[in-house]
Length: 265
Image (cartoon, rainbow, N blue to C red; front, side):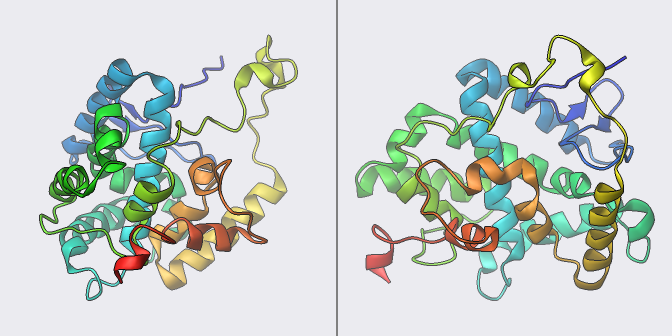
């Protein structure tokens, strides 16, 4: 029996297991010791009911991307994020213990580590009212930045002219319509039957996974794993994004400002 989970299902709240986003064949971790992750799924569903699946899809993926960028930053350069980084590190070491990466590594588990905070800011990113404030004048923007800073644990947050994915979203994306998924299940050949679904792990998939395990065990950079994962591609490269030759360039661009906040630095 096949079951295709919708974009807004990341946790089985009944059994308290992490179930998404899709990754190589690994059972998701049990979340008994992280009830905040289970609670975040319920907030996610409320976001969908309030603003619709399209707005929620864009907001949650954007929030994942933002949190991944913030996880990558040096705490000395961005001390307001130090507490969240510490929380994310604790969760990631529970899900993927050091020296056990070969048995436990999965990019999906790193998404789980930032899920509560991502949903917290996605509530703002998916709201038309908050998006209008973000795109508004300085007074309106200050209301938005105070709200998102509080949700990120940084009450003094102000948009920066460089390496700030929130500032990039305010400048480039908040006033545009949400980005849609790159494809839909109905568009796939033979979508009326589940027989076309291939659940096997191909040799190429396994080789990519093994390389990722080796890289992660040596460098332990969770934010980079999330930013390179196909799940966030639709918000790293949007329809209006400046074309880049390599995906690493698109990741760099997704935290860059060129106008509104660049002028202030």
